[in-house]
Length: 51
Image 1 (cartoon, rainbow, N blue to C red):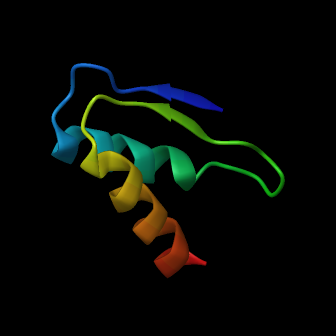
Image 2 (cartoon, one colour):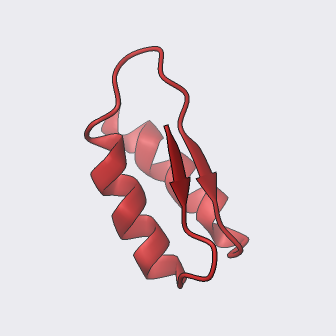
């Protein structure tokens, strides 16, 4: 799964990522394209907390 968040603010990237992560199946790769450097840490933190 690929999510293009280029040009979006961090809050929008966070929101869209969380929506898509709810749809992801075990074994799928989730790729996010983002400009905000904090997006990576934010998404990783969400995944760790959710699972």
